[in-house]
Amino acid sequence: MPKDGWQVGIDIGGTFTDLVAVLPSTGDVRSIKVPTQRNDPVASIRAALAAADLSAECVDDLVHGTTLVTNAIVEDRVEPVALVATEGFEDVLDIGRAGRQHLYRLDLLPRREAQVPPERRIALAERVDFTGAAVLTPDTAAIDEAVMQAKAMGVESIAVSLLHAYANADHERAIGAALAKAFPFVSLSHEVNPETREFERTATTVLNASVMPIAARYLDRLQREVKGARLHVMHSAGGMASPEAAAKRPLSMALSGPAAGISAAASVAASLGLEKVLTFDMGGTTTDVCLILNGAAEISTDSKLAGRPVRQPMVAVESIGAGGGSLVTLGTGGLSIGPQSAGAEPGPAAYGRGGTRATVTDANAVLGYLDPTRRLGGAITLDVAAAEAALAPLAARLGVARRQRRDGAGAGAGYRGTRRGRTPMHPPRLRRRGAHACRGPCARVRHRRDRGAALLLGLLRPGLHRGRHELHAAAIRADAEHRLGREPFCHAA
View 1: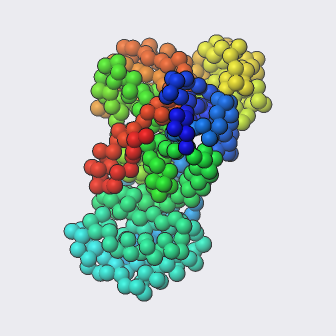
View 2 (view 1 turned 90 degrees about the horizontal axis):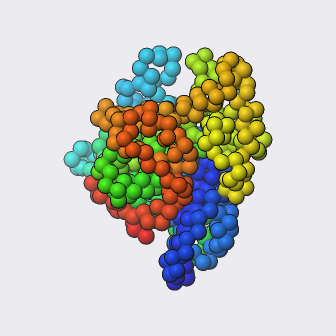
């Protein structure tokens, strides 16, 4: 490894990949934005390094934020999992909680179907009480039988969640050791979420198991790609993790990209002495908002992702499918923004890559918020005429003037984002609002006025600001891990 090599931060978004590289010995800084290759994120990293005229051999440290795990969960592209549970508690995922996602919609399912179907649930004859005392210890025959059943299910990832394993993990360790000899991926609840409440602990453990193969393959390929460089992965609570730790607990990579931007915004807020800041991260696919109080982002330990419980430290982000590439449609209730997105290919019509459906970016291009002479990612020149053509069918159906239709699309995305940042304890009329992502400053100018913020802070190069913060992110949330009785997960660079 070079002694005085480059330090590189890379953030892969749904539309663009941002890179910032710093050479500490000279202070030289390079910043690059390239289109994301959504089907091959490693290729996006390779392209960004090449665009910055860097090779993997000259990089000391590479810090990386990714939406790989989040997208797999949201798009339901996770791997099948088998579940080993205490006999009599195999159906805890079906029982769940009494709450409904839609309180007044009896025509809809009260919650998503369990991630592990009944035929892939294995009962283990064992029992530990709430004090951690072993009531029934599983014998070798019971463990061997559970492993044989798992082998017959044709999966490569196993989740183990035994009753009260947070109080005494001996039984989980025993079955986990036996399973590890037969399966490449084993997720144990006392390692993932050592807390009471069986449903949330089991659901989180299963979700972690379902993304382990995806994350392991990706991280293994990435490490081979960057060769001798030290690789750090952004943690969902704002710190960093080693690739080995992230592969074991890949669920911690969920929201790792937005976490970097929020940590960057928190750093800026603290340096400026701002007490209350609402961040607004508008990317190509989603808009994320988060509240920062006294220079620190709110951390949640009990969240949901795509309707599934996720119990681990995460930045308290509210995310909606209303980004720059989100499609603008007309339904019975009027204009709607997202959650479907034009993505990077073909992208908004304004990108000139064959897109024909109207997006928020097209509205911003027609409004003149975006400079048509500037090349995006070094490869895209805005086509305002194509954006106009994409918006025209909506205008015809609505019977409105051009200015009205583009104003409506631009306002809708930002308004949805600020609404989601509203909570009973923290109303939206905050003192400051920051914009730290690619399209954030565009939307914030309007919504400072509409939502009563005293000051708007925008970043001239917001996407790169997130990438640069990834260079300096440290274990700022390790205390949350200790509070939950876990081994330290985050580490400093």
